[in-house]
Amino acid sequence: MKNEFIYDVPQSRVIFGAGSLKNLKAEIEALGAKKALILCTPEQVALAEKISDLLGCSSVGIFPKAVMHVPIETAKEAVTVARELGADCAIAVGGGSTTGLGKAIALEYDLPILAIPTTYAGSEMTPVYGITENGIKKTGKDSRVLPKTVIYDPELTLSLPLDMSITSGINAIAHAAEGLYAQNGNPIMSLLAEEGIRALADGLRLLKKNDQDIEARSLCLYGAWLCGYVLGNVGMAIHHKLCHTLGGSFNLPHAPTHTVVLPHAIAYNEKAVPEAMERIKRALGAKESTAANALFDLVTELEGPTSLAELGLTESGLDKATEIALSNPYWNPEPIEKNAIRHLLQNAFEGIRPN
Image 1 (spheres, helix red, strand yellow):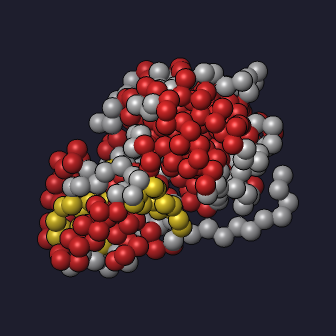
Image 2 (tube, helix red, strand yellow):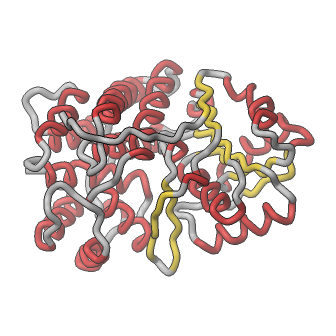
């Protein structure tokens, strides 16, 4: 156990439970807000309109242009719209793309954010933001971007397709897995990380049997909350650096990329952090396997993607991805070495089971 650490975490107000969307108007009022701008992707317009109707005159409009990796052009347009409408808060409805857009607005316009997650991205629990400019995704931390309130309503995840549920859930597991060996980790975050991984693994296995199981949806959303909370309070390492590179520079889909890369990133760090690996194995119920193989087997069991090639990356991009990832690396428990990272990416590209 780490015997010396600092525990200093920001908090969001959380409302959890099936049907909890009904509390939205009261939560907006609790923020002291009267003019909410609703953010969503083009695919979530119907839900955004439902929320706008629920708010009545407290809604000033919908901005339905959230996309992956938060292009700076979209962020600037959203800020302009928020200012023109006189919005005094933003409601981010959807997954990580929408939450990310809300954070970008908060950086420039200092609006309080209320998040209503419909996936398991977990970014609603973090002060971490990411904005893509000229093909490079830049990330940072700022307390202004942490949503003031988060409404977790499992009923809103029932329409999330099974394949997206699986990759979104593995994405959340990645947050907790790296939190277990973060440079600024602590025992409290390790407890939350292990519980989050366990809840998501169990919930995803249940969803595979019946994706309309509200108890399974609740378990996954609970796990995503914990995993996101871990990500928001400790650092990231090689897994997130690689995924940010592949997403920002090659426009690979966010959650599927995390799903493919995670077992290989964990294999890279396996020898450096044995205690973290034992926690991952315990959370997954894997006694005989390595942590990396247990994660790979979970993805395979859930029929998730296992290779970067199937996500659209070409082999010619692997050298460039290696160079970008090494140009400004995150701290990592295992030293970052070019040939080893290139080998990791090759394995992930081919979908080879980690050694």
